[in-house]
Image (cartoon, rainbow, N blue to C red; front, side, top):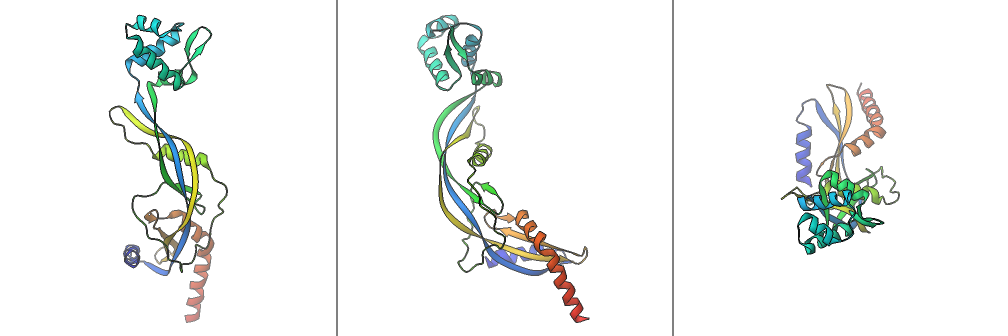
Length: 254
């Protein structure tokens, strides 16, 4: 931690007009959740599947054998594909025969097909101060020492927002497309709250003499970067007090 602190100080003082007026180290509470979710393999729809969906869209078909004769394809192969499409909700048996569902129309138009995969699990963290859910970083972060003070502007935790977790997974748990498919996270199947961990943060209060401004910089070890949210919270509450303290010091010397 001391090495990191020294490196951050050096970077902040690179500008000759900037000075550090105060520095602090404190801990930020972060709640961890074990989250399980479903996955699908998204593929480009092959020619045969497109042909079957077009056939269900345009014709009244009740039997795989009829479709196999129309397309000159093995009946067993057509039946297996029909069962898969029915199982994934692309087609359904209607009064006059099999027809496309709304999902089937959508997939046919986009030319994609989702194939179910085994589920997966990950850890999602939540910081009430940021009101933010995050996936864990691959880098390790130091654990806060017991004696460290807690962040003085703790946020209100509120209720668990699974819909926001879902959006996070849908955005972040997308594996690069390979061989014409992507693996995508879908529905959350389980969410279990685990422990609350405390992440150390390094706060620097600074004064720029050239611009005559006070400001804060906070290094968040969980993110491994400067945290604009925390810095802004501190500035909004304390900058006026910092300036007043400087003016009082200057007046005392004069």
